[in-house]
Amino acid sequence: MKTSIFSLTSELHDEQSVSHVTQDFLNSLQLTYDWKGDNFSEYGKTGLDLIYVRTGGTEGIFKKLLPTLQKQSSQPFYLLTSGKSNSLAASMEILSYLTQHHIKGEILHGTSDYITARIQQLSQVTHARKQLQGCQLGIIGQPSDWLISSTVDKDIIRQQLGIDFVDIPIQELEKTILSITELSSKETSHIESIRCALPDAERIYTALKILVERYRLQGFTLRCFDLLTSIRNTGCLALARINSEGIVAGCEGDIPAMLSMTIVQSLFGISGFQANPAHINPETGEILFAHCTIPFNMVERYELDTHFESGIGVGIRGYMKKGPVTIFKASGNLSRSFIAEGELVHNQAKPDLCRTQQVIQLLEKNQANYFLTHPIGNHHIILPGHQKALLEELLKTI
Image (cartoon, rainbow, N blue to C red):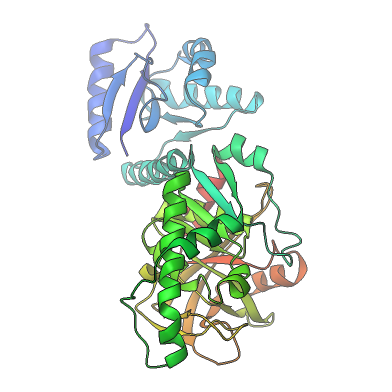
């Protein structure tokens, strides 16, 4: 992600001395950037834009520029300051003015290491926001009947994130599946029922990829349980593979879960594991999550089984690396979110649950109460690593 630095300088300050301070300061950051100086014509047209407040007395200059800058970009205003020549004082006055007018901004000031790390974090978030802008997500079939709270405000999502939704009838998918001649599968199984189900699982995968291309989708959610009766198979294998290819593929027509996965994909390059709690210990903060599919690029190994509820088709039992994880969910109108860090203690393979099963210990055990008192639906997204800071940073920009 390209970083561009624009500058504000008072005419009262000697340019030669200010330039010397500027060069020393920017060199200390060990940052790759494009220097734009006081020419703001390209502001908002590249990646992360920083405004370097070089001196005091620049508050009025910024105020005059503000209406134009707001037209050129919707990102928060990041004010970079060395602290020399009253630059910090001017930045504080500018930020105060922005706050009074309900405009987001932040002063980047501190040690060189702190500023560099903060810019890297902001660059990652800015890149994610640009990835989301113009994103097109498909809803293949309507949300499953049991998802009575998992709604989405499409207008808010379009305004805040630039994401559009496309409604695709489940019948179009079914027709596409049936039009595909039988395919062989690179997967295999020693269980005859699974081995016999693999060709149709491949047809579902191929049909979904056709719809992705037809509607130019960056992701979709599938009313997958309908396929149990119409095709006598499941989408679990297809979703595991498509997610690993960088296209968000959600289950059960859950739109907020798909939205949450899309946010995760934009930040970290993986879709995350869509799962629901199967058991919670509110006293210890230990939670068992389960679902019948998981992205192949999130696991160390996987096994094929049947789909749990129906006992037919192909389900995925994936084994993710033990260690740090983050649990995330955003509501369908972006008014709420849940983020919790934990440790994947172990994967298990009990026969009476959805096939991929993860036991996670929350770092803050009292966060388990959220699931029992005010959850955002049942599905949540699990991703490797402790990623709370970056997720919170992106949500702050909305």
